Length: 521
Image: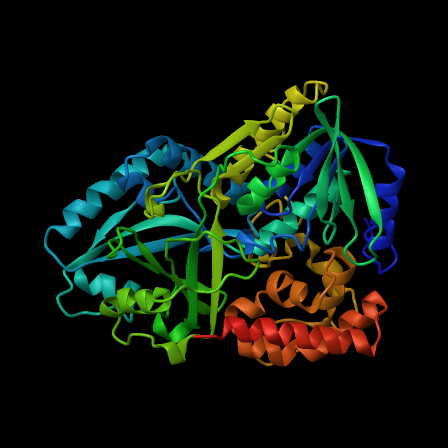
């Protein structure tokens, strides 16, 4: 597909396809990790597939992860070996299918007690064994000097050594955009800012959805043979379109992440705090030229689109990281704070969300609505495959086996090259063919005018937030610098989208308010 402002990826063209299609084989509600995975899997099987997202792709939880593709050393400690084994296999697939977005990352666990090395070493050796042929590298014991070399700012007082092991890191929002483009490449249709308002029910069966274009207000009645509800923490709301009084499947929790400057942990290795006061682990990770620290696990009853830290969460992260670093970060050092909601499966009154399932669940309603929820980014593909298997049966679609396990995602290079270190991968040449390829829009981060134009023409970006939060990660890396760049991003985006000065002013105001929230400590 050619990326032009009025080409096949323009909003008008995509809406035209929606109007022209009578019945879809599969309609997916939700444009996060799981929904996009379902859309790719269904399209790869040859089904006519439509994905509808109420806001932007990965607007919610799927852009607010800890940026890790991992088996989960914490789940290993809990004894959940099947989940760890499945996640390690999926980690291997992602490294192969999206090498421009998923990269190996070495972690080091500092040891301050003589029992720590055998205890953590045994667990991580077992982690290697579970990975089997999907392993990245072997764990190894480090002496104190080697631990300091790996983690130059680790606290040396009482340090006895460390354990190094391998997992993988990724850019969550960029992986979501790659999935969206892969779905389009396969002939599917995806639309953001087109929320679903209800379900079409006929003779006791779910036969379609009611939706509207958030930009124009145009309403749509979309017919489908099967519908997948992949709306994450909002899955119960969609289930209640069909059955208003159905019991909740989910007990959401939230995780807070702090971003600080790179000098708090220079180098290429990540630090794992193995035991926190609430029975979790804490990650200190190099990411996009900054350092990410997180996360928490706090129950939450409401579901805000832009959740904020609860009282004590920021202080908990800073206090937990402090004993492991020579110079502990303070609130004044935080460049951005972001919060994600987790769709944990569970019910009841327990406040210990850390004990709830991180696995996924598929439910088929009496009317045939397929709901997939739970899980995590690492296992999104496997979740999607199972959901489409179920939808295939429910919708009585022609049987076709899944094809996503070895499907290379949009932009994935076929061999290790410079494209493997670029989030655009093989699409970089298309990006740099646009005006402004060498002109940066901010001195604080690498974002060019051409990348903004590409976001509008080829990645369905519709707002300044879409560009600065998800097509580029400026909001998550340095919220104040992102707010400073907003006027220039709005100007370029307005050219691409045909917007006027009033639209620019409104966009700058909206983004400034949002950025202020990410700086609120």
